[in-house]
Length: 190
Image (cartoon, rainbow, N blue to C red; front, side, top):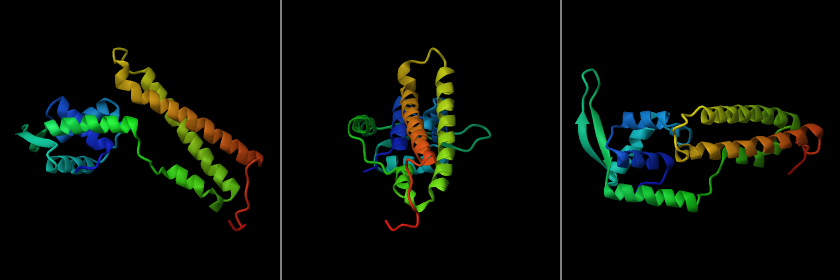
């Protein structure tokens, strides 16, 4: 059975919406801003996902299109099983999230490997990045066409809430490091 992933769910959802070729899927995900929540940067990953979905009878090749100067493109549609699995995955992802092992959390767990000053400098860079990302997502949401229903941008609202929390927490940790309220001796044994 195909492993659940955000990309596999996005492919099934698009193919259930209407039959389409992989390039169109990638294009729509970007146009709709879904590339902010699903990694479609590498087309090879998209094709591997489609191959797995086809292998597991969740997608089916419907036709092959060819435009004058373009290579042949296979158009895929979701099967009934693919539509049902997309719904199941959506419900599962909403109700029972997987424990994800975030790299940032792992780095925090090993902060004592660094000198407190080096850790503070690294966190300052991350804070700057998170603030920029928060600004970008807010701007994107504020400049989204007014006719878009809220359901289309709800993941951006969630991203903003998450980024606001991230920024506040990192800023507080950075303040503690810079004030000396949080410190450690890197040379001391753990």
